[in-house]
Length: 397
Ligand code: UPG
Image (cartoon, rainbow, N blue to C red; front, side):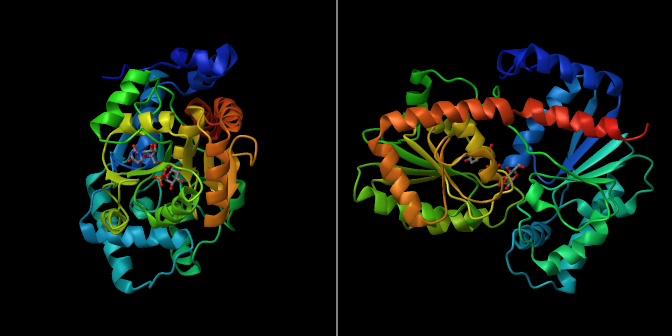
């Protein structure tokens, strides 16, 4: 089991001064009750963040809880369609979808008594909850999606819910929307002590890869993501097939299916047709495997077409991997193209960068070092914690 860490444990990564600052900011907020609510305890970036964030906030003396919205498959099918449309996909906005969405959220409101000093609602699934409470305290909506170009139909429908909140948190400045309420911009970050990120010995890495039958005779090209079309797994396969004509390598696509994502299983099945001796596709729920692959890979890809932030990018960069990311949203904030990784906009570009990195271990080493330093400075979740503290502290008591 992982030990529960306190802010002092992070000093080795963030330094004394940052630890002192976080403690100082937490002090006036001690004993406050803060409640986070999202739509899954397992799978995907939001649950990954909340798992670490809620523990560290509690260790700082802020009583921080985590609840999950419950609903039937129909509900999650509708909310996944909203998710896709918010990232720019098409949607048929029927009265039935609105009815399923609003009535399930209403049921959740009845059974959740959200009387806390601050309530933080994550993503669209529980968004309308706010309409069912006589609020005495600040409510914040934290949207994790890529809002570069949301579909107008779904956005216009959701705006009246969003505008009831006291503040909205988005991951990048470029997601700013025309809203009556304050918008705050900060990215999530990764926890160096989580199972996905903690140090692993070479033996432990070998053991995990062997356990899952991942061949290590050739350099590994890896993408790890929820099985989701926005992560462009098909584009990764095409880029790999092109690159492989020039350099020998093995592709490993590992993913999981979040409990609030009904499309995941279908995306996974569609990828199975591409499997062969050199294209490994696995659906597993093992953070240690993610960790081992990011450490052992010659090249890590995150070739997303839309990406609110992309924790997998920082996770791999933190391990000193050479990362090729889609030139979109949150990935653009993490990778400085040509320095701490590569940004690409097409399959051909991705293939060319894979080949270049496979042929040049020095380049991989330089990029990996720059990448780790970039994450240490900007994308550890202690910084996210500090930004939450700033925001919570900014509300009038
Ligand atoms: N992961 C696993 N096992 C897998 C696949 C993924 O543990 O097989 C983990 C992965 O290591 C990471 C998380 O799941 O920690 C996935 O997070 P992320 O890469 O951020 O993607 P999403 O699940 O799509 O998360 C949403 C947004 C994303 C944003 C995140 C937090 O799409 O852009 O970074 O929320 O704001």
